[in-house]
Image (tube, rainbow, N blue to C red; front, side, top):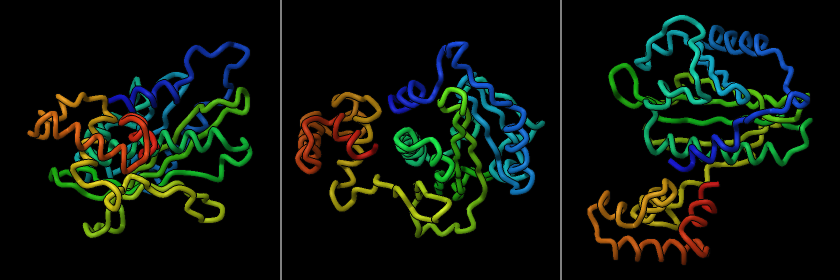
Length: 250
């Protein structure tokens, strides 16, 4: 999945110079993650962008989502909490990745002093203990190092959503938690612009599949895929399909 490769290249602080090393005390942030887990009965994931590790803290909510509880924290040699991510609905997982890249770009454009005002709030579908999709609220916060100005930690919280109505879609928002203002809404709903088939094809394009591969997935001809791709370009007024994906999903 190319969006995941892009996120890794964007988020991870590779080979930091000693003089630029972040001196934040990780134990302080581990305690914050544990506190959220205990007080909110959430699954709390602290990811370290410098060391490419995650520390996962689980409450009884983990059991409701069919996850093993184990001891706190469990340590993952990646910034991605794969045990949780693999249970997210495929469409929501792709949107989650895209939304996180959009959040990083927004934060990167802000004055460092303003970054603490913003966070991600999402409503996503996650398989539960009965292998059925349940709505989960996902929140994400970024912690930047005051020593080198780089993103050091992300804190992700997963909790059962109060509203389980299937009439409401999945939500992906960036909010200013000081003002309560929604800064960025999910722009992935293009039903008024693109057809469902065009959306499917655009998603496959964004994942790096060729027209021939997409035709095989959807049981249609390559010519039909090409025609849909051309329609997408015309509707979104862009020059190529990759740009269409970036314009639509970033």
